[in-house]
Image (cartoon, rainbow, N blue to C red; front, top):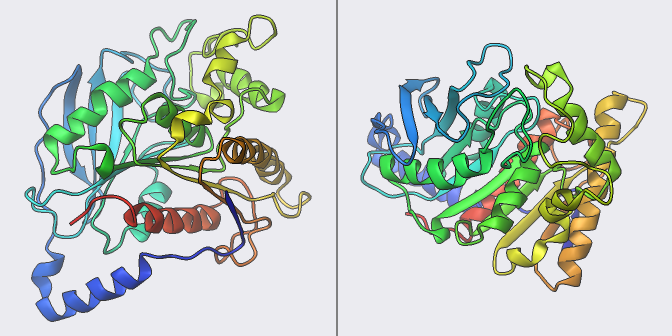
Length: 357
């Protein structure tokens, strides 16, 4: 195990400098706008909205799935319609094959939020990498719900792993193997990334958590999950507190225990693993986000300790109050500057390992 404090190397920097120099020699063609792909239905997914461009490299598609036919939408979302944001590398032509980084948003967030697009585009500028951010719902928790209420069937894990990944591989020029695929996520999405990687280690070569809720044995995390089912800020209609993982109370909490990433790290052996967390910095400054980060850091500590006990190499990027980690980062939860530094570092790490052009 390697715990890193404050700064971390951005090993892709040298390659990016070389690529930039090459671009200067080869001229404008090196930065041609990516070709617009057409998405066909498949794997239980119906494409109801073809690519809509939001920048030179980023577009969204809209899909429906039989695994989450309806969901509690956030304002502006349509229940049962799932936006998927895709960022392509410069010069994507549909022929050269690229690795794919799946990154999962938090709660209650939108996959196509402008901040998410900007973070991704900055972290991948000049990098031969496709990034995909699917809808995970305001409180989907990247799992197949065990006792859904009025929301109905919520099989988020099946949607993403068994349907979306093959759909992306069918419709984009990807390296469609474990060696060409990484996953990460923020907050709820950090839980989702580790949860998915542990369930399907055959799919992913690298996993990362950005301030993720990694320990479902932690009573504070259980409170956060159950509260999200009862909070209209995470979407409506509301659901019973046991909708997602069942009862959180012993002795009926077996599903919580079985699905907790921190206690099932053995499946990550042979995979690159990176965990990012701050300590909240000054807890009196923006106390809600400060305390939130302070508490999720405890789940990172538990997960890192279990990885170390299992002898699984990993990196714990423990950046404390953010000093020296990213300009403007002061260790708070969901802070743009901290998340940008997380993504910048993580992209460098995965590109050291993934197959790519």
